[in-house]
Amino acid sequence: MKGTWILSWILIVFLSTVAVQSQYYSNSRPYDPKPEKVTNLHFFFHEYVGGQNPTSVLLAQANITSNNSTVPFGTLYVVDDPLRTGPEPDSEEIGNAQGLLVVAGINSTAVVTYLDFEFTTGEFNGSSLSVFSRNPIIWAERELSVVGGKGKFRMAKGFALINPYFMNATAAIHVFNVTVIHY
Image (tube, rainbow, N blue to C red; front, side, top):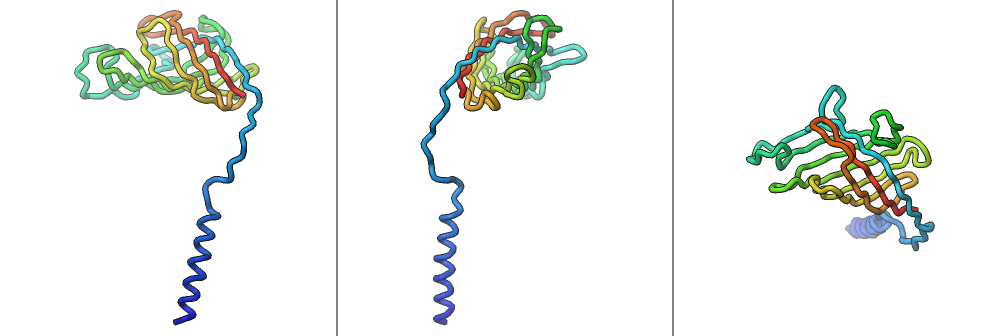
């Protein structure tokens, strides 16, 4: 009996030290970042909602919406839009924007926008920026928050100003001016 009691205490002590040693983090160290850089990007976002090769597709729509709007509350789109150096469809492609657009305004045309801009050429090849914001699509100029990035844009923050360049029933081209603070 005494041997069992001693063995139990040894196991309790051993298991308590294992629990302390299996933390999910290590000791914090001071963060010594490199100097911040500011990069300004200018590109065109080409979106095609119709035709043979759409880049924005309706994924889901709420069946409880009583709004007769062309873009009713609860609509979800998935996008994979090319990013180009100019407004022309044959201008140089520098990357693509992939993400989701959710119509989140019951009585407005507010779209919650999540996009990841992946750059595939030039100095930022292999790097990307993530934007996530409320996007009131009827405003002439809109602003989205840059909430992160990877590659050369690791730890990015900043903003993207969007202005419409061209729109019709099947296509939209927007000018993006992005200011990014990164390391």
